[in-house]
Length: 366
Image (cartoon, rainbow, N blue to C red; front, side, top):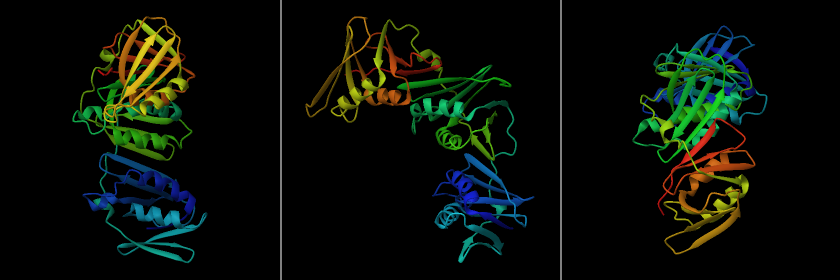
Protein backbone atom coordinates (compact mmCIF):
# COMPACT_ATOMS: atom_id res chain seq x y z
CA UNK A 1 0.00 0.00 0.00
CA UNK A 2 1.27 3.43 -0.94
CA UNK A 3 -0.27 6.88 -1.46
CA UNK A 4 0.43 10.61 -1.25
CA UNK A 5 -2.03 13.12 0.20
CA UNK A 6 -2.23 16.73 1.34
CA UNK A 7 -2.20 17.12 5.13
CA UNK A 8 -5.45 19.16 5.17
CA UNK A 9 -7.34 16.51 3.18
CA UNK A 10 -6.32 13.74 5.59
CA UNK A 11 -6.63 15.68 8.86
CA UNK A 12 -10.41 16.23 8.92
CA UNK A 13 -11.50 12.61 8.20
CA UNK A 14 -8.82 11.36 10.59
CA UNK A 15 -10.18 13.60 13.36
CA UNK A 16 -13.73 12.40 12.68
CA UNK A 17 -12.77 8.73 12.78
CA UNK A 18 -10.39 9.01 15.75
CA UNK A 19 -13.29 10.37 17.85
CA UNK A 20 -14.81 6.89 17.87
CA UNK A 21 -11.58 5.14 18.90
CA UNK A 22 -11.17 4.60 22.65
CA UNK A 23 -7.73 5.22 24.15
CA UNK A 24 -7.85 2.11 26.35
CA UNK A 25 -8.91 -1.03 24.55
CA UNK A 26 -9.06 -4.70 25.46
CA UNK A 27 -8.26 -5.53 21.84
CA UNK A 28 -5.07 -3.78 20.62
CA UNK A 29 -6.42 -3.49 17.05
CA UNK A 30 -9.30 -1.28 18.30
CA UNK A 31 -6.77 1.45 19.11
CA UNK A 32 -5.92 1.51 15.40
CA UNK A 33 -7.64 2.87 12.33
CA UNK A 34 -8.06 0.73 9.24
CA UNK A 35 -6.56 2.37 6.14
CA UNK A 36 -7.56 0.97 2.74
CA UNK A 37 -6.52 2.11 -0.73
CA UNK A 38 -8.56 0.85 -3.71
CA UNK A 39 -9.13 2.37 -7.15
CA UNK A 40 -7.63 5.76 -6.24
CA UNK A 41 -9.84 6.01 -3.17
CA UNK A 42 -8.69 6.15 0.45
CA UNK A 43 -10.97 4.95 3.25
CA UNK A 44 -10.21 5.39 6.95
CA UNK A 45 -12.23 3.35 9.48
CA UNK A 46 -12.44 3.53 13.27
CA UNK A 47 -14.57 1.41 15.61
CA UNK A 48 -15.09 0.52 19.27
CA UNK A 49 -17.36 -2.47 18.40
CA UNK A 50 -20.43 -0.34 19.22
CA UNK A 51 -19.83 2.47 16.71
CA UNK A 52 -18.11 2.55 13.35
CA UNK A 53 -17.10 5.60 11.33
CA UNK A 54 -15.81 5.29 7.76
CA UNK A 55 -14.45 8.35 5.93
CA UNK A 56 -13.70 8.11 2.21
CA UNK A 57 -11.77 10.54 0.03
CA UNK A 58 -10.38 10.47 -3.52
CA UNK A 59 -6.66 10.17 -4.20
CA UNK A 60 -5.28 12.06 -7.19
CA UNK A 61 -1.66 10.91 -7.11
CA UNK A 62 -0.30 7.51 -8.08
CA UNK A 63 -1.27 4.81 -5.59
CA UNK A 64 -0.61 1.18 -4.74
CA UNK A 65 -3.70 -0.63 -3.42
CA UNK A 66 -3.59 -2.36 -0.06
CA UNK A 67 -4.79 -2.20 3.52
CA UNK A 68 -3.37 -2.08 7.03
CA UNK A 69 -4.11 -0.69 10.48
CA UNK A 70 -2.07 1.97 12.31
CA UNK A 71 -2.36 3.61 15.77
CA UNK A 72 -5.12 6.22 15.46
CA UNK A 73 -3.86 8.80 17.97
CA UNK A 74 -0.26 8.67 16.81
CA UNK A 75 -1.16 9.14 13.14
CA UNK A 76 -3.50 11.99 14.08
CA UNK A 77 -0.84 13.67 16.22
CA UNK A 78 1.69 13.37 13.38
CA UNK A 79 -0.76 15.05 10.96
CA UNK A 80 -1.50 17.83 13.45
CA UNK A 81 2.18 18.51 14.07
CA UNK A 82 3.16 18.89 10.40
CA UNK A 83 3.03 22.32 8.69
CA UNK A 84 -0.12 23.44 6.88
CA UNK A 85 -0.45 22.19 3.28
CA UNK A 86 2.34 19.64 3.81
CA UNK A 87 2.38 16.60 1.52
CA UNK A 88 2.31 13.21 3.28
CA UNK A 89 3.51 9.97 1.73
CA UNK A 90 2.38 6.77 3.45
CA UNK A 91 3.91 3.45 2.48
CA UNK A 92 3.79 -0.03 3.97
CA UNK A 93 7.28 -1.47 4.44
CA UNK A 94 7.13 -4.97 5.88
CA UNK A 95 5.20 -4.82 9.15
CA UNK A 96 5.56 -1.03 9.46
CA UNK A 97 4.01 2.05 7.89
CA UNK A 98 6.43 4.83 7.01
CA UNK A 99 5.07 8.37 6.90
CA UNK A 100 7.25 10.90 5.09
CA UNK A 101 6.75 14.63 4.77
CA UNK A 102 9.53 16.98 3.72
CA UNK A 103 12.51 16.06 5.90
CA UNK A 104 10.34 14.29 8.48
CA UNK A 105 10.06 10.52 8.66
CA UNK A 106 7.90 8.49 11.04
CA UNK A 107 7.75 4.71 11.29
CA UNK A 108 4.58 3.30 12.85
CA UNK A 109 3.79 -0.24 13.98
CA UNK A 110 0.89 -1.96 12.22
CA UNK A 111 -1.51 -4.80 12.92
CA UNK A 112 -3.02 -6.95 10.15
CA UNK A 113 -6.16 -5.57 8.52
CA UNK A 114 -7.68 -9.05 8.79
CA UNK A 115 -7.87 -8.58 12.60
CA UNK A 116 -9.93 -5.39 12.26
CA UNK A 117 -13.62 -6.01 13.14
CA UNK A 118 -16.41 -5.10 10.76
CA UNK A 119 -19.70 -3.99 12.35
CA UNK A 120 -22.10 -4.80 9.53
CA UNK A 121 -21.72 -4.55 5.79
CA UNK A 122 -25.37 -3.97 4.99
CA UNK A 123 -27.97 -2.21 7.14
CA UNK A 124 -31.49 -2.59 5.81
CA UNK A 125 -34.73 -1.24 7.23
CA UNK A 126 -36.68 2.03 7.35
CA UNK A 127 -35.03 4.78 5.28
CA UNK A 128 -35.34 8.51 4.88
CA UNK A 129 -33.41 11.55 3.75
CA UNK A 130 -33.24 14.41 6.22
CA UNK A 131 -31.52 17.80 6.34
CA UNK A 132 -28.51 17.65 8.68
CA UNK A 133 -29.63 20.74 10.59
CA UNK A 134 -33.02 19.10 11.27
CA UNK A 135 -31.41 15.95 12.67
CA UNK A 136 -28.88 18.01 14.64
CA UNK A 137 -31.71 20.13 16.10
CA UNK A 138 -33.54 17.01 17.28
CA UNK A 139 -30.38 15.79 19.02
CA UNK A 140 -29.49 19.17 20.53
CA UNK A 141 -33.06 19.63 21.79
CA UNK A 142 -33.22 16.30 23.61
CA UNK A 143 -29.85 14.63 24.23
CA UNK A 144 -29.15 16.44 27.53
CA UNK A 145 -32.05 14.51 29.12
CA UNK A 146 -30.50 11.08 28.46
CA UNK A 147 -29.55 9.09 31.54
CA UNK A 148 -25.90 8.42 32.32
CA UNK A 149 -24.90 4.89 33.38
CA UNK A 150 -28.40 4.10 34.63
CA UNK A 151 -29.09 0.44 35.47
CA UNK A 152 -32.17 0.88 33.26
CA UNK A 153 -29.86 0.67 30.26
CA UNK A 154 -32.63 1.62 27.80
CA UNK A 155 -32.59 5.13 29.30
CA UNK A 156 -28.89 5.60 28.41
CA UNK A 157 -29.75 6.55 24.85
CA UNK A 158 -32.05 8.49 22.55
CA UNK A 159 -35.31 7.14 21.17
CA UNK A 160 -35.73 7.76 17.43
CA UNK A 161 -39.31 7.27 16.29
CA UNK A 162 -40.14 7.21 12.58
CA UNK A 163 -43.75 7.74 11.59
CA UNK A 164 -45.31 8.86 8.31
CA UNK A 165 -44.25 12.50 7.83
CA UNK A 166 -42.55 12.77 11.22
CA UNK A 167 -39.21 12.01 12.84
CA UNK A 168 -39.25 12.28 16.65
CA UNK A 169 -36.45 12.19 19.24
CA UNK A 170 -37.18 11.47 22.92
CA UNK A 171 -34.85 11.26 25.91
CA UNK A 172 -35.55 10.74 29.60
CA UNK A 173 -33.62 9.86 32.75
CA UNK A 174 -36.74 9.15 34.80
CA UNK A 175 -36.87 12.64 36.34
CA UNK A 176 -37.30 14.74 33.22
CA UNK A 177 -38.19 14.18 29.59
CA UNK A 178 -37.36 15.98 26.35
CA UNK A 179 -39.23 15.48 23.09
CA UNK A 180 -38.73 17.10 19.67
CA UNK A 181 -40.36 16.52 16.28
CA UNK A 182 -39.27 17.26 12.73
CA UNK A 183 -41.51 17.11 9.69
CA UNK A 184 -39.91 14.88 7.08
CA UNK A 185 -41.19 13.16 3.96
CA UNK A 186 -40.31 9.88 2.35
CA UNK A 187 -40.14 7.63 5.43
CA UNK A 188 -40.33 4.14 3.95
CA UNK A 189 -41.79 2.43 7.05
CA UNK A 190 -42.48 3.03 10.73
CA UNK A 191 -39.67 2.28 13.16
CA UNK A 192 -38.68 2.85 16.78
CA UNK A 193 -35.08 2.41 17.99
CA UNK A 194 -32.81 3.53 20.84
CA UNK A 195 -29.41 4.96 19.81
CA UNK A 196 -26.78 4.64 22.60
CA UNK A 197 -25.40 7.74 24.29
CA UNK A 198 -21.95 7.68 22.67
CA UNK A 199 -23.50 7.18 19.23
CA UNK A 200 -25.76 10.20 19.75
CA UNK A 201 -22.82 12.42 20.73
CA UNK A 202 -20.63 11.30 17.82
CA UNK A 203 -23.50 11.75 15.36
CA UNK A 204 -24.13 15.31 16.60
CA UNK A 205 -20.42 16.08 16.14
CA UNK A 206 -20.45 14.65 12.61
CA UNK A 207 -23.58 16.57 11.54
CA UNK A 208 -21.94 19.88 12.42
CA UNK A 209 -19.70 19.58 9.33
CA UNK A 210 -22.39 18.52 6.84
CA UNK A 211 -24.53 20.69 4.55
CA UNK A 212 -26.11 18.18 2.12
CA UNK A 213 -29.09 15.98 3.11
CA UNK A 214 -28.08 12.83 4.98
CA UNK A 215 -29.44 9.34 4.40
CA UNK A 216 -30.71 7.62 7.54
CA UNK A 217 -31.29 3.86 7.63
CA UNK A 218 -32.83 2.28 10.72
CA UNK A 219 -32.27 -1.46 10.86
CA UNK A 220 -33.10 -4.12 13.42
CA UNK A 221 -29.74 -3.98 15.22
CA UNK A 222 -28.02 -0.93 13.73
CA UNK A 223 -28.66 2.63 12.61
CA UNK A 224 -26.63 4.01 9.71
CA UNK A 225 -26.20 7.61 8.60
CA UNK A 226 -24.47 8.44 5.32
CA UNK A 227 -23.35 12.07 5.37
CA UNK A 228 -21.32 13.03 2.32
CA UNK A 229 -18.16 10.93 2.29
CA UNK A 230 -18.64 9.68 5.85
CA UNK A 231 -20.63 6.60 6.88
CA UNK A 232 -21.65 6.37 10.54
CA UNK A 233 -22.95 3.07 11.95
CA UNK A 234 -24.07 2.45 15.51
CA UNK A 235 -25.40 -0.61 17.29
CA UNK A 236 -28.79 -0.05 18.90
CA UNK A 237 -29.76 -0.46 22.55
CA UNK A 238 -31.70 -3.70 22.83
CA UNK A 239 -34.57 -2.71 25.10
CA UNK A 240 -38.04 -1.20 25.24
CA UNK A 241 -38.26 2.54 25.79
CA UNK A 242 -40.87 3.63 28.38
CA UNK A 243 -44.31 4.72 27.17
CA UNK A 244 -43.23 8.33 27.37
CA UNK A 245 -46.54 9.86 26.26
CA UNK A 246 -48.13 8.67 29.50
CA UNK A 247 -45.91 10.97 31.60
CA UNK A 248 -46.84 14.12 29.67
CA UNK A 249 -49.63 15.85 31.63
CA UNK A 250 -52.70 16.13 29.43
CA UNK A 251 -54.32 19.08 31.21
CA UNK A 252 -52.48 21.85 33.05
CA UNK A 253 -54.76 24.50 34.51
CA UNK A 254 -52.04 27.03 35.25
CA UNK A 255 -49.99 28.67 32.51
CA UNK A 256 -47.07 30.97 33.21
CA UNK A 257 -45.50 33.08 30.46
CA UNK A 258 -42.06 34.44 31.36
CA UNK A 259 -39.06 36.11 29.73
CA UNK A 260 -36.81 33.12 29.06
CA UNK A 261 -33.47 34.87 29.58
CA UNK A 262 -34.65 36.68 32.73
CA UNK A 263 -35.94 33.42 34.21
CA UNK A 264 -32.72 31.61 33.29
CA UNK A 265 -30.55 34.24 34.96
CA UNK A 266 -32.79 34.35 38.04
CA UNK A 267 -32.62 30.58 38.48
CA UNK A 268 -28.83 30.68 37.97
CA UNK A 269 -28.38 33.27 40.72
CA UNK A 270 -30.69 31.60 43.24
CA UNK A 271 -29.12 28.19 42.52
CA UNK A 272 -25.80 29.40 43.96
CA UNK A 273 -27.18 28.89 47.47
CA UNK A 274 -29.19 25.73 46.77
CA UNK A 275 -28.30 22.37 48.31
CA UNK A 276 -25.29 21.15 46.27
CA UNK A 277 -26.53 17.55 46.31
CA UNK A 278 -30.24 17.94 45.58
CA UNK A 279 -30.21 21.32 43.77
CA UNK A 280 -33.77 22.12 44.86
CA UNK A 281 -35.46 25.52 44.44
CA UNK A 282 -38.91 26.57 45.60
CA UNK A 283 -41.11 28.50 43.18
CA UNK A 284 -44.02 30.53 44.56
CA UNK A 285 -46.59 31.80 42.09
CA UNK A 286 -49.13 34.52 42.64
CA UNK A 287 -50.88 36.85 40.20
CA UNK A 288 -48.28 38.38 37.81
CA UNK A 289 -45.40 37.32 40.10
CA UNK A 290 -42.94 34.44 40.48
CA UNK A 291 -40.72 34.20 43.55
CA UNK A 292 -37.79 31.75 43.45
CA UNK A 293 -36.14 30.66 46.71
CA UNK A 294 -33.31 28.32 47.70
CA UNK A 295 -31.49 27.38 50.89
CA UNK A 296 -28.83 24.91 51.98
CA UNK A 297 -27.68 23.01 55.10
CA UNK A 298 -25.42 25.96 56.06
CA UNK A 299 -28.61 28.02 56.62
CA UNK A 300 -27.80 30.25 53.64
CA UNK A 301 -30.70 31.56 51.57
CA UNK A 302 -31.35 33.20 48.20
CA UNK A 303 -34.57 34.75 46.95
CA UNK A 304 -35.55 36.66 43.83
CA UNK A 305 -38.88 37.79 42.41
CA UNK A 306 -39.73 38.47 38.77
CA UNK A 307 -42.85 39.62 36.93
CA UNK A 308 -44.61 37.02 34.80
CA UNK A 309 -47.84 36.73 32.84
CA UNK A 310 -49.91 34.56 35.22
CA UNK A 311 -53.43 34.74 36.62
CA UNK A 312 -54.02 31.28 38.10
CA UNK A 313 -54.01 31.72 41.87
CA UNK A 314 -51.27 30.89 44.37
CA UNK A 315 -49.08 27.83 43.95
CA UNK A 316 -45.88 26.61 45.62
CA UNK A 317 -43.82 23.91 43.89
CA UNK A 318 -40.21 22.65 44.03
CA UNK A 319 -37.88 21.61 41.21
CA UNK A 320 -34.31 20.53 40.59
CA UNK A 321 -32.95 23.87 39.34
CA UNK A 322 -30.37 22.21 37.06
CA UNK A 323 -33.15 20.54 35.05
CA UNK A 324 -34.95 23.86 34.54
CA UNK A 325 -31.78 25.72 33.54
CA UNK A 326 -30.81 23.03 31.00
CA UNK A 327 -34.19 23.34 29.31
CA UNK A 328 -33.96 27.14 29.21
CA UNK A 329 -30.43 26.89 27.76
CA UNK A 330 -31.75 24.67 24.97
CA UNK A 331 -34.63 26.93 23.94
CA UNK A 332 -33.91 29.95 21.73
CA UNK A 333 -37.16 31.89 22.17
CA UNK A 334 -37.55 35.23 23.93
CA UNK A 335 -40.43 33.84 25.99
CA UNK A 336 -41.08 30.49 27.65
CA UNK A 337 -44.32 28.94 28.86
CA UNK A 338 -44.62 26.77 31.98
CA UNK A 339 -47.73 24.62 32.20
CA UNK A 340 -48.46 23.57 35.79
CA UNK A 341 -51.06 21.55 37.65
CA UNK A 342 -50.65 21.32 41.43
CA UNK A 343 -47.56 21.05 43.64
CA UNK A 344 -47.30 17.29 42.97
CA UNK A 345 -47.70 17.45 39.19
CA UNK A 346 -44.94 17.60 36.60
CA UNK A 347 -44.32 20.85 34.75
CA UNK A 348 -44.49 21.06 30.97
CA UNK A 349 -42.14 23.64 29.46
CA UNK A 350 -42.62 24.79 25.87
CA UNK A 351 -41.65 27.54 23.46
CA UNK A 352 -45.04 29.23 22.90
CA UNK A 353 -44.16 29.92 19.26
CA UNK A 354 -42.91 26.44 18.32
CA UNK A 355 -44.93 23.23 18.10
CA UNK A 356 -43.51 19.73 18.38
CA UNK A 357 -40.95 20.40 21.13
CA UNK A 358 -41.75 20.03 24.80
CA UNK A 359 -40.06 19.27 28.11
CA UNK A 360 -41.46 17.59 31.22
CA UNK A 361 -39.80 18.10 34.64
CA UNK A 362 -40.96 16.22 37.72
CA UNK A 363 -41.46 18.24 40.92
CA UNK A 364 -39.37 17.85 44.09
CA UNK A 365 -40.51 17.70 47.69
CA UNK A 366 -38.68 20.44 49.60
